Amino acid sequence: MKRILALISAVALLGICSASAQYKKTVLPARQIAEFNTNLPVDLTLVDAADQRAIVEIPSDVADWIKCEIDGNEISIYPKRGAGNKIKSLSSDNPIKVRIESSSIKCINNTGIIRMTCKNRRLNRFELNNSGIITWKDVQVEFGYLEINNSGVCNLEANRITADDIEINNSGRFLCAVNIFCCDCWEHNNSGVNDIKSAVKANSVECNSSGREDLRLNVTCKELEVNATGIGSMTFSGTADDIDISSTGLTRISTSAVNTK
Image (cartoon, rainbow, N blue to C red):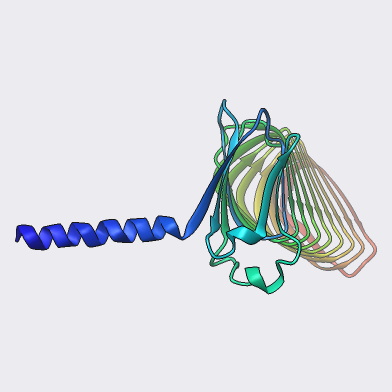
């Protein structure tokens, strides 16, 4: 029995060593990390830390062809010149793993494929610029100001997002399922394709659309302003002190379930 247990332990240890050997780990310390840039498949985790650094784990078979560097307060991960097919094994199922430990991260620029989670307590300002594919799933996050600029595919899911102001600009495909946004001002500008099912608690809610809409928004606000020149449907429910609707397109707009003063 002891021999069997010893063999099992040895096999388990070998498995752990083999798993860890599949990645090349790099730790990049920095005085400040404010921006992250990539055009590759990345699993990205953001966390608070007083001593700022980035921990990067690259699959060993492509590690020699990946450039990972800090320039000022920016971290960038890109293929090296001539990488080509040598990094074709990278995918959303086999990504680079990045953990950014920083309380001052302000901007993510993505032209690749990112799965992101944000475990920071609060970020004063956060800007997400996506022209690739990004899936952002969180339980609860808080910002001073949140700006999302999407021209690719963005999938946002969360239980609660709190901020002073929130601005979402979409010219790609934007999918949003947030149980509740809490902010002073919530603004959404769409010239692409939307699929939004959320609730917003704010002083003002503004929706401007010249694209295709599939929007179902429960609002608790003082002012609800809607400007639509596109197509699709926008359905609002909840409460609003004032409603201002302007529609010159083919968008079906319903506010019959919104209680007003």
